[in-house]
Amino acid sequence: MDFIIKHKLIVTTIIIQLIALPLILYLVKQEQETRTQAATSTTLYFNPTSTASSPIQATPNQDIALDLMLNPGSNLVTLAKIEITYDPNVFTPAAINPVVVNSQVFKTTIEGPVLSNPGKIQLTIAVGSSHEDIIQTTTKVLTLNMKIKSTTATTKQIGLGAVTEILSIADQDGNDNVLSVATPATVKITIPVTNTPTPPQATPTPSPSPIPTATPTITPSPTRTPSPTPSPSIPPVIPTEEPAAASILNFIGLRLHGLGRGGDNPNPNSIGILNPTRKIRPLTVEFYNAAGSLVNSATGNITYTGETTGLFNGDIVVPASIANGPYTVKIRTPYYKSGNLPGILDLKKGENYNMNLTNVALVAGDANQDNALSVADYEIIMECYSDLLPAKPTCTAAKKLAADIYDDGKVDQKDYNLFMREFSVQRGD
Image 1 (cartoon, rainbow, N blue to C red):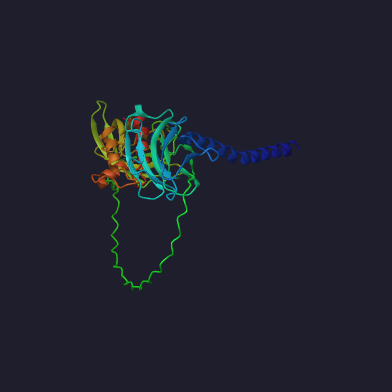
Image 2 (tube, rainbow, N blue to C red):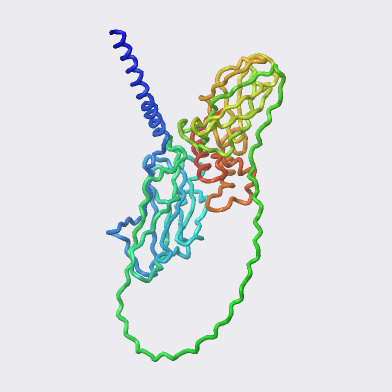
């Protein structure tokens, strides 16, 4: 009987553990995801402030000026992509200086202002390349100058569109939009009352009816569709075949900043793009002797493991020409700073080595591939920046590839802010 009771207790315990384990794993995952999510504490609002019950008063043909203000909260703001929305039947941008950016704070106007779409004004502005200019206190972003176009009484808002985005380099923020609240301006237009005399009514004179003229039909010419230009890519390196005596380094879990779950300098747990464009990347492995001299190198490919793990794995064949012995190993991949592997590799020909690299991360942003982050890399990103407008004519396909450090096929605010996050804390070898 005791045996049966003990058996039932054991089975019951196992069942409870099986039920509880998924719940525990779920809670741990939620806690990890919470730690990697951006703290959206930045607010935008217009000055003078207004509400539906206390609007800004205006009359037809009047000029109004609104200051767009930014309160960063706990964020460290580097960039603002602004979309101002308004009713084009009620408002129109001022003919001169419709948008005046606060250039003492936002020293770089990356794009815009773009006023080509009625009802929208778009621009992207940033603090530049210096971290001394990061926005940490409430400040004016810009002054908006508008004219009242409507000739009828109405109440309308001037607001901020859905693409408005604020980026930060604070540890907890990652590369996500940290905008929390965007408060619009409410403008009430009233028509002044005037006493005007009633003019005498004149007898209308009938006009002859015009003779309709036949409108010729214009046959549209066929439009030639241009052939798409393929995007450049880093060609995978074809590993050189080696004799049987060659060794293999099996790299597992290499983290590339900004990609997948590779983190970045301020926050090693931040999540980058989960579906990068270049999933296969070349990797160079360098072998240094005790004197610190480069002895030889090997090349191969690393492959993205998918969004669940978000890391890179790959097998690198070590040339048989490298002699047995202890080596310091350094790795590098294009547009990243190189990194040293921990410890010493005691190389023996014909051996396979499992290299767990979960504690190794390469720093993104080395656009000019000089193994350093500098203003020169920043300038390449600015040269190829294209979100609201085309990139500069000097941006070549090779420069665009180097500037796309977020690896989503374009160069925009994501690449700029990732560079600023990496640049804020200089790490790497």
